[in-house]
Image 1 (cartoon, rainbow, N blue to C red):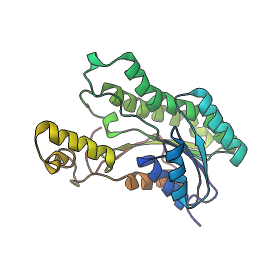
Image 2 (cartoon, helix red, strand yellow):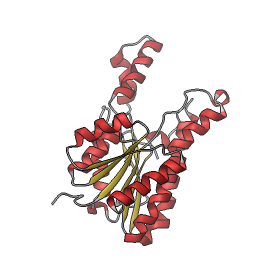
Image 3 (cartoon, rainbow, N blue to C red):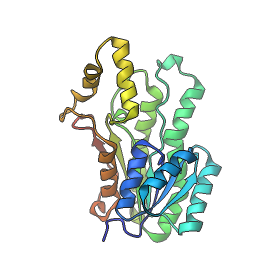
Length: 257
């Protein structure tokens, strides 16, 4: 029997990157996966690659009515929710604090933190009904360390850790665990673009720029979306039944506290 057989999972931000890999891994382990994201086209691509049962619900996690529609659709079509992966996120601006507009600040928080709150708020009652649930929040290594010129992003990801730890204590008596994963620099188009921009800005090679991300890590490598997906499967399974309130680094050995 697969680890997540007969479980129903919602994955936000499932249209690309880490979210897409998480959705795929949950499906391979037997879960019926609800794919949520603002981009319906990306969700269709993800669904076509899962080769298993899935439900697409176009969702803007920063919009309360959109989140209500997501949860009501899942309840109507599938009955309940066992696993929630709050993965939706945005990078926010790269600017000094004094140059960031209020609109830029609020946009970053509206997705990275408020969206996580909203989806959790409306899913929790369904989990309480069955006295079972697994909530997995995607934070970041930058939720634990300084990252100059990225105050909205780092602040929102630090907030995710506080939200996770507190929610774990609110929900423990109901058989619901809450954990977060803290990805380090993750292989893919986004980090490649960052490395390329750094290479051009500092007139160094791509490989030299890449080493600024890999050299500080014990394993001297980037992590992959599949690494994060495997950790999510573990946290969603009975193997992690007594693990809650934790923020787990997945960084190739780059350590911050």
